[in-house]
Length: 288
Ligand code: SAM
Image (cartoon, rainbow, N blue to C red; front, side, top):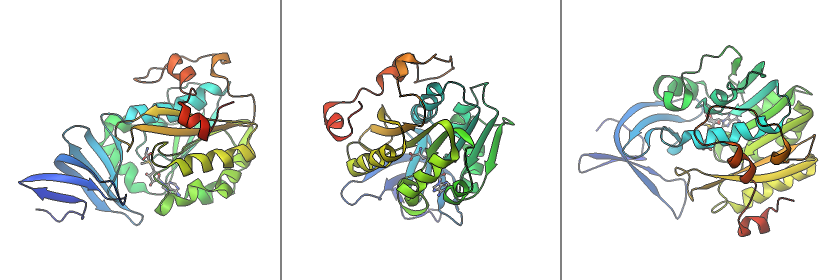
């Protein structure tokens, strides 16, 4: 077997990827082959071909997005804020190296600037070359790739963006600080007066403390804050949460002028219903 990292194992001539980031839960994927495997200064970057999910992006042994269901997450993190904002022009994406969120943002003709601040250039290179089911072979001149730490980038920004999307990896390593109050405070400052911030806030099943903490941070900063969910089969627990805050009008999807976009998951009904939470989440993070 080639010299693969420890999360790839060969059993009976079949390759398996086992995520080992959780102490009491291991998820394994049967692979057809490894397409790309390199260490960057930030993390280990892999693109693998799996049996059930097609091609997958794997960072430090943890699956980030897949050809099979990447569109669900990327559409939900991008279209919800871009629909809620009445006239978005300037967008900032922090993280999002698979380019899926940037690709979804390019569907809005009103946008003039899509800044994508990704800490690891190798993730973008690997996804543009080997994961076009997600990256869409992005070549839109409105997308500016900036390869730096999102944390430092936003410290300098004020009144600059209509919508900010934090498409981060899990809160460990380089993404840990992307879940902290100081960071959200800087993002709030970087938004224009009607600006909207959205971030992925982890699993409502396994990471309720993060869901709650993110909501509490947002509520201290924004005039209106809500939590919404989508089903993403790749992510542990299946159900995934997003937290959104606005400096402007209250979050009322039923009252906005819906902009038509070409999608696979998101539509007006999903937009209006994604804020309806099941009982256990209503108790944790009630949407008023
Ligand atoms: N959708 C995926 C999920 O929820 O698992 C995550 C998408 S994306 C691949 C996450 C990206 O955030 C990675 O490419 C990672 O390099 C980037 N990232 C992590 N920390 C960062 C930071 N401090 N600044 C900018 N990008 C960061």
